[in-house]
Image (tube, rainbow, N blue to C red; front, side, top):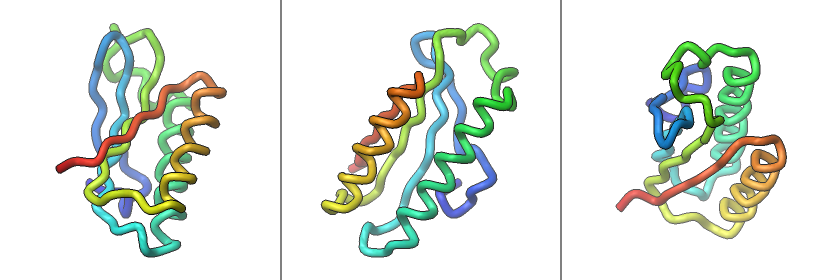
Length: 103
């Protein structure tokens, strides 16, 4: 899966009692559409959480939600700024947000 498929949750797992929803991002950071696609994908994940669509997955995972973003490419300055804003917003909304560059 990828951020280009904005209506699909890429992966759902359980970790430390939390539901972990992962996003696979294979795009370069030199395109403004990238940020828009990523924002739409994250918004869809939030909607799926808040409407209860993911509550049936891992019913024993009751300690909250984590959205994880797995990146293929290093962040540019704009990407870093965007992800810091996403993290701030999600943390203040009661969710965790992590990202990692896969090597």
